Image 1 (cartoon, helix red, strand yellow):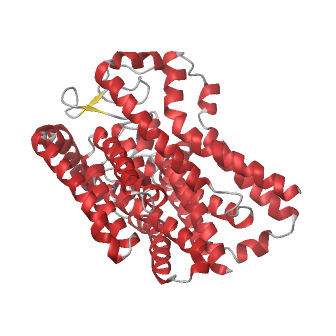
Image 2 (tube, rainbow, N blue to C red):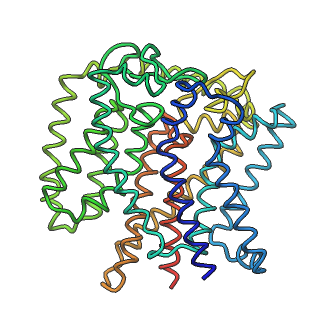
Image 3 (tube, rainbow, N blue to C red):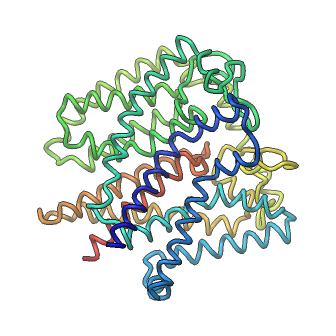
Length: 451
């Protein structure tokens, strides 16, 4: 009985975690810039998600200690190597940053929050899944998919507001006279393709249009498997088109291109050979439509001189910074989001998540970070291999879970490619829910596979 109550509470906490992350930026904007509430109390409130993570960690240790299972659980923990490398990376980079590079403790904590917390979330939710969640008690994949469907419609309505009357968003704390988001100012009501002119870009509830693009790319494979793979042709066209319009409205070139490649891979991987031609037949017209729109809007959609120049300049600067201290790095917080959050540090973004880690931590610790990041890819790829080998009808649940893990892998794979010119793995609205759901899917799949 007590176990059932614990599971129900954990499911409720998980729902709060996932849904709250979708709403945080909008609510924080309203409270901070419309109501003018920006005291230390509210700053603590906006850390609710980190507080949940700390609470879940404490709960796990307390649960295992009370049952005298702490040592046995971690001795058999499937992510044991992952855990030790994570701990070593955090501790050693802290020593190097604080004692050698002279980084402040608070700056170090801020840097870890952005650069390493995704791996921490993965381990916490994986452990909770192994101990408490089952397919019957936790079916959040389908629920989250339904939330995404609602968000697709909501993003179209938001796009209409941006087009017809963007000044309405000042009621929620946005500012139509700001063109680029920055710490301490109200976010722009409207982003444009050319900084202060061009086509209007849709950020919806997210911080920036590119953040919305990251989210859509991360979850498109899961949405495809849950809501397109076995649906009717009419539903495939409707849902696929809505998703495509949502991506198109962000005017993110990376998101649009990646979505097309993802879809082709999904069709080839998920549809039986005899259905692939049919699936590609309805997808090709959408590709042609995209090509036509791109051709006529080439200047604003493809060229985008402002964006191109910025990406290339920041990447070159990043390489120059690495050359200053290639082995031990410049110190935590010297690049990426942390540099925008800490007073006294010049904000700098290399527009490349890999360069960011190398600049901050140096080459050796960059390799450890790459191992952790690569491990998430490895388990997804392995699940896909298993999925292809499952032919027994009695293993349908195992096959579905394997396909869901594959979907998360495909999402993170293309986020990784976007990371060459962007920074998707530090965006909390994408990383936190994505990695947590990935961990739950892998936990359920791992247990199913071990039976």
